[in-house]
Image 1 (tube, rainbow, N blue to C red):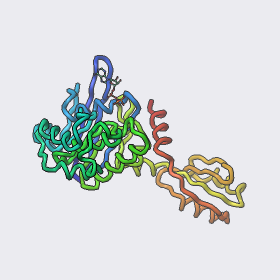
Image 2 (cartoon, rainbow, N blue to C red; image 1 turned 180 degrees about the vertical axis):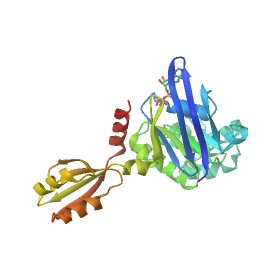
Image 3 (cartoon, protein in one colour; image 1 turned 30 degrees about the vertical axis):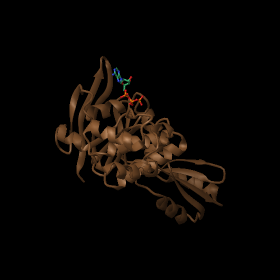
Image 4 (cartoon, rainbow, N blue to C red; image 1 turned 90 degrees about the vertical axis):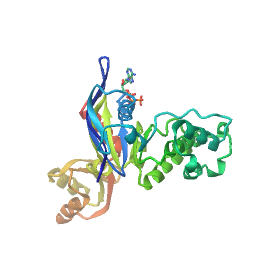
Length: 298
Ligand SMILES: Nc1ncnc2c1ncn2[C@@H]1O[C@H](COP(=O)(O)OP(=O)(O)OP(=O)(O)O)[C@@H](O)[C@H]1O
């Protein structure tokens, strides 16, 4: 898979504050890459550096295998903050103005308004739009030049649940067109629902990165029920791949080591004539994973 963005040992210091610390990561073409971290962890600074609006203190990055240039910038659409749209102009008039300021081709305005679900509202004044519609118009603006990559900073910030759902759905639809999307978010739920890959930042440092499913799959928790709970608990004490277990209401929650699955547990239980009446795999949420990562590496 082609690497779209290759960041090598990138650092940024503001005076004595290390905002980004020796960050190395690669973004593959076609991925939805989430930069996840609490406020102040360096997400915006990282995006600012790769978009060439903040000077790195050290390190380097390439886009499409080349140093940043006018040519590479043309292939990237960015939304770091909502553009200053004019309240009394319509959606399409605002995009026309935006296209002329940015030197983008206005020919795709109607197509982009359709893409973001504002086709039927293209002649409505911006001032009457909900926050979600305003954010979707901003995404249409970022898409005008038909970029290969879209870089978004906290794209659902400040939106109500419906607006959040609309923008997330739109991000998925844009990605389905084959675009690569890089987004910063402090919302674990957002990254879990939208992203294919994640990098967790804390105090400017990379804590963990990789496909979202790999990170989640690492910690599988299995809920089991059996009439032989006493014997099951005894056996769990002795199974080497069980990292922890605890009795819950009607069942036992078992955490397995990486690379072991519920099938291993089921087989070993059955071998001891312990028949399970329930076996449910509960993946540890990214939130639990995130708390563990930041706790262990603080
Ligand atoms: N221009 C600046 N001058 C000095 N310090 C800065 C500047 N910009 C950011 N910082 C500091 O650098 C650190 C990282 O900030 P950054 O905005 O990159 O984090 P973030 O993860 O995007 O957080 P947020 O979600 O709050 O924007 C923070 O401690 C912040 O206060």
